[in-house]
Image 1 (tube, rainbow, N blue to C red):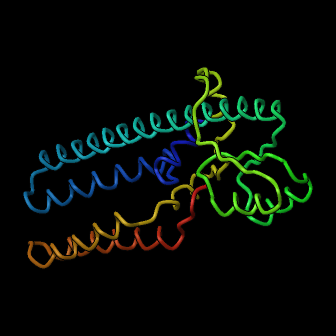
Image 2 (image 1 turned 180 degrees about the vertical axis):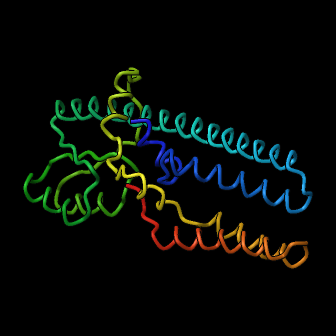
Image 3 (image 1 turned 120 degrees about the vertical axis):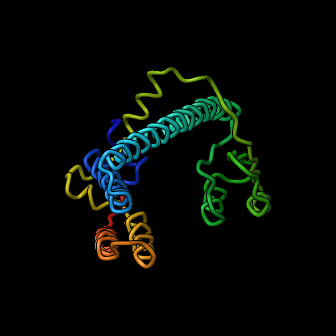
Length: 226
């Protein structure tokens, strides 16, 4: 389950794709510094630094995504708990629940089938045109604002997350192509611009062309993750 949600968090990239990105940009940074300073030690330190920074950034991003996903799921379950309670109360009082909110044609059908005097209840923001339409046929529509019910248990939240886990393509090579090549295209353009003012222009142009090629390939074969 965690792997599937991580794919969403990182725009479809699996663990192999993420590690390839980290290593590629760390090596690229090390090579760029070496072309300027010709110092292997500094280049190695930059390689390690970029790698660590990318790991910390992805950890922070995943932590925030996981926290926000948990809060969103808890809120949805609270609303469902409240919705069930309200629906039971409305039925006991002789009303009818319309969920989700119908359009004008569907509401007209409900009014004709149920007859005059029927009280319909919807959830969400009130729509004046539906209220007027129901009154025209002798019915009544009321809108209840969304509220939250009982706090769900941790097991219920985990069960909902497990049930909603996306079913995507797990093939490694397909996952490598899921990410659009924006960062590669941008890096390639920057390197080509730098080749105009820095020494060893040929090497800078080769690195820039490599980044542009990778970005173009990823763009061409980009697949939106499910």
